Amino acid sequence: MRLIIKKKSHLSESQVTPESVYRQRRQIVQGLGLGLGAAALSGPASASFLDSLLGSKEPENKAQGAKEAVARTEPLTFSQPKAYQLQVPSTAERVATSYNNFYEFGADKSDPVRYAQQFNTKPWTITISGEVDKPQTIDVWAWLEKQQLEERIYRHRCVEAWSMVIPWLGVPLASIIKAASPNSKAKYVAFETLYDPKQMRGQASRFVGGGIEYPYVEGLRLDEAMHPLALLAVGMYGKTLPPQNGAPVRLVLPWKYGFKGIKSIVRIHLTDKQPPTTWNKLAAQEYGFYANVNPKVDHPRWSQATERVIAEGGLFGSERQPTLMFNGYEDEVASLYQGMDLRKFY
Ligand SMILES: Nc1nc2c(c(=O)[nH]1)N[C@H]1C(S)=C(S)[C@@H](COP(=O)(O)O)O[C@H]1N2
Ligand SMILES: [Mo]
Image 1 (tube, protein in one colour):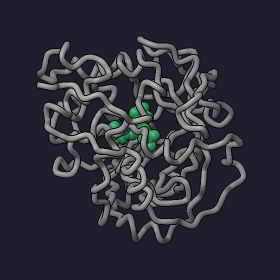
Image 2: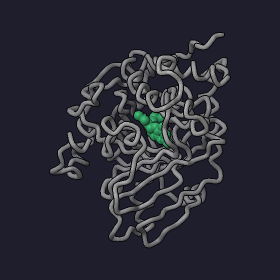
Image 3: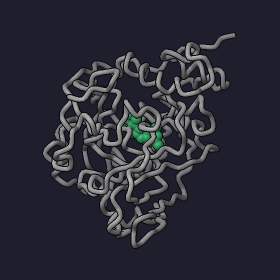
Image 4: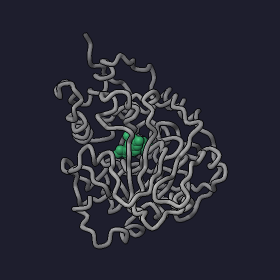
């Protein structure tokens, strides 16, 4: 019986993220009651191993997935505010849309582009509820037609110590929150991803979904959510978001680790208490509520001082560079955390 299928993709994780790091992050996931022996699941071949257990087939050509994804997007009209155009070459679109974290479709970097292509985002609604004077349900595609979209070229830093530069399209998160009129009790904002195990193979199986308890949830303090850098993204590279990047609507918070950027949002709920967040529930000592990018506060099992840059040339020749405080957005956001011990509130 052949249990391990070696992947041929040139987008193999090991070329982008130091092997020790992605292996370590996955190990947490593996330790969480997945049922199979840890030995059987350990190492970078584990996703392939699971695939083979579940009977899925390796596609002939993975680049095909990326092409389909681009074909499913639609062009958008937008402005380019001067303040947000980072003067650094963007990561190649092909790379940013085929090397993803979206555990609902599998824990391997190449799973989302393979398994999210049939994801149905039409129709799509987002409810805004809780401590607001005007709770509402938004029909996303009708709402989108009335928005003035902005392009924002932001740094994108994953907690796994790799980074990209991505031209996102969206509206300030503040605009949609203001429209619901938060009341005086509103101190935090909770976000929730769609729960639909029929469409999301990772939600249907703990093996595939990395042991995460779904739906994926995230949260921000209200003042963080109202910050002008916080973007409710609906597109990238001039088009609507492809499914693997969080279609139709996701968060982008460039001064925080990527896992705060929750994808495929269906619910926004304002509360007076700090809401639970997915990675914190999974491993609280490793992933905090704040998750601000900070080169001086290491992950317990790896350094955050530097990052591997996945730039224009894609995965080949990617180099390490120093990680910047708040991912380079210190001037903009440091005041949000004045007086806080950033080692304690990591
Ligand atoms: N619902 C959901 N949102 C998610 C994730 C996820 O697994 N599920 N992964 C997060 C992580 S760890 C990162 S780094 C970013 C990746 O976004 P990208 O694939 O567009 O680069 O999405 C974040 N949002
Ligand atoms: Mo991440």
